[in-house]
Length: 251
Ligand code: GTP
Image 1 (cartoon, rainbow, N blue to C red):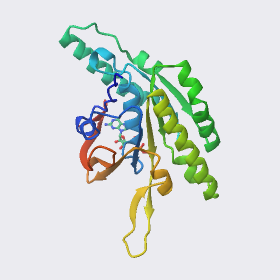
Image 2 (image 1 turned 90 degrees about the horizontal axis):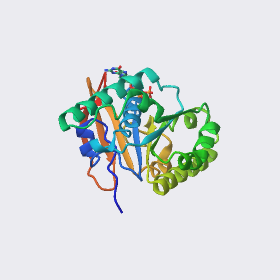
Image 3 (image 1 turned 180 degrees about the vertical axis):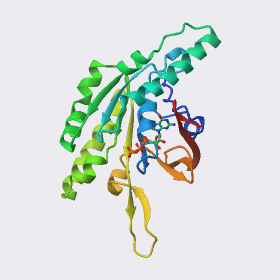
Image 4 (image 1 turned 90 degrees about the vertical axis):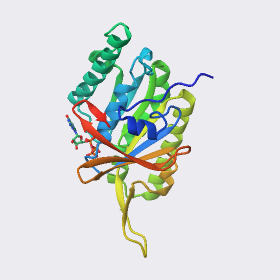
């Protein structure tokens, strides 16, 4: 079976750390504090999944589920412009036709959902198989963030655990059945353990921690942003710096 390439992020360091980029058929979770760049990362991936195949891309489409209201279409346009310029530059160098990817084509390749509460989120995830069947170019489903409604609306923790487990199973099924990437973002929370200093860990608890195959923690150190591969089935734990520029995620 021919294996499709991963989705690049335009940070070579991060891509290398992940083994080439965000893999298909797996769940990748980006965790981090507010403002560290999780939404930017999602928008970058939603754009880069659409890079045409002659440039080594997947020529796919994205489902983008926004639970926080942090998706900004103008920002997607900035990132799309940079990717389109990059592809046109490659086309010129290699003698391909330019204009295979345009800002308009990128925008229409992002299927956007805004979910205002966990019921909407669960319903949307439930309907995804039918939607993806109708849009077979979809190669990634992004959820920014998976934590939001489960942290704010919940008092009943056993119900929360059950719903999260069901949702995790839906994501695993989507990833393997449709051979697509699932990209989730998550917040960080403070964990207090007896006899230890409190530390920041991904939110939603330990059982949710098994949902994702790959976990990357994004964090600040001084002025610098770092991506830390925290969990991976095949790569060793490591860290790389990355930046967010006008054009999106870069080294
Ligand atoms: P929450 O949504 O609050 O949880 O945060 P997040 O981790 O999703 O952060 P987000 O992806 O919204 O990243 C915000 C960061 O992106 C800010 O620190 C900005 O520095 C950076 N950023 C956003 N827009 C631009 C832009 O147009 N140019 C540049 N250079 N940076 C930007």
